[in-house]
Length: 235
Image (cartoon, rainbow, N blue to C red; front, side, top):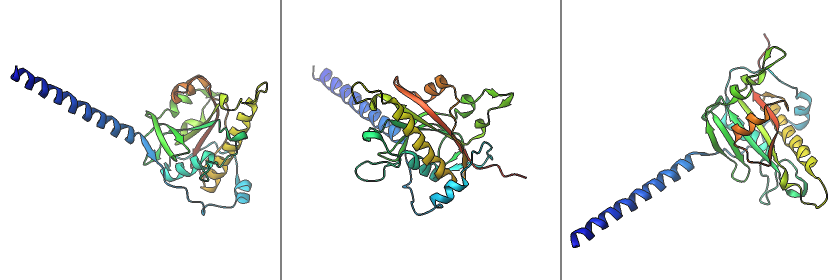
């Protein structure tokens, strides 16, 4: 009986330590899936007036990679937290903050290709899936020409969670979500200019594919797609 009890104890300890190791591996994997971004520097770039003057819709990109620092600044410009009260770079009606920001990374130095979700509170990216989805998402042709967005090293996507906004009984406030998506997108576009990059706002995309690649739940809708890259210099 003592021998059987000892065997049972040994087996129990083995199972216990195996579970601990599995949990540790899982925790390490989760930690690896969250990329902490560099804190944004707010004393660089150019003036708002100059950014407004120089902003143009850019649809041709070189094959140069973006940097993780540039991605950090672009995420912060769109939805970053600006004080300890949780206010963000983009205003929100009744502070409901219905927007979410995603990144399709194809060619970003220091960041594996994949789909990421931006968290304003932690100023970090959480990996959703691996591998670049940019060529797959923009594989259609427009007027016989290949979709120019395929050449972007990174694509930012703004989505809206409409149920966060509809808080006044009898009133449809869904239009506010689209307004906020516009302000967040313009913030990102001005930061693009400040960094010497190129981009433009696009609203023509495959909504079903976008939902699939971002793993969106019901009630969250993709609104704006902003490809970003280095401008292709004219010969």
